[in-house]
Image 1: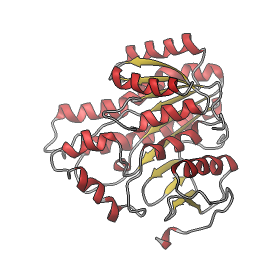
Image 2: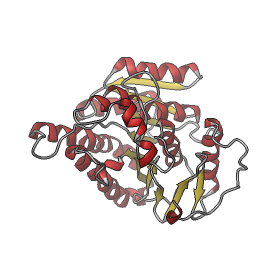
Image 3: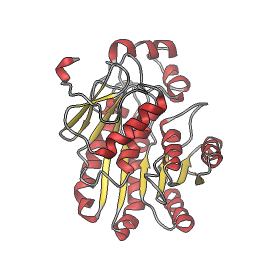
Image 4: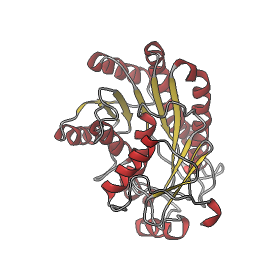
Length: 318
């Protein structure tokens, strides 16, 4: 790895996994550690967080585990103070927690709707409230909030609380970006599309009105241009780019669609290729190319692709 986050201190919430394998938070925490970061592994499920920490430490990385409820402001504040005592600063906050409850406004209870707002939106507000004074005093920081394509469009099933909270997360991030950009703090949203993580098997496939696991994987063949779902590493590598020191001009309008029809970064649009690689519509900086090249090579998508052999492609060509 290129040590893009060498000596930086990162907090990743939802860094465990609901089952064996790689959830978005676990993959991001491990990738950040591989790139040289010290990682605060945060999850409500201690055994899941400790499994992530074991992976990091097994590769020689540095981390601490915090078992907390991220909707509890006092608990989050205590975790951030522990991070400061242990590592001396906070450079990156990755708000990764989220989950959906099915139902429209008639079927969903008021309590469930409020719980969706708390888990998917208020948790990010609380995390930001805790770290922003620290980042402002440092004169630098990165906040990345993990949204969802479900917050931008209807996906064929009702999940009104999840949709509303994830849509709100995008605008919340934009507001932060405008407010704190001049203070050296970059705020962005990663927006995953259809992703195959343990959450799909252990929770989503068991929800009322949803397909079983086989059906959820099969539907990607017709709904995703690549013909398959993405996975946690798609989200992790996009997060790595945003957390690295290079994208200093990216404001909060920048969103990334993963394993969907396209990825957006402000005026830049990047399309997935048939081989799993990336085509660019407008030029990307060398660091972004380098990160995605590492990603493609590690995943075995296109080992023979030269680092600068990128082709232009328009959205209408799908």
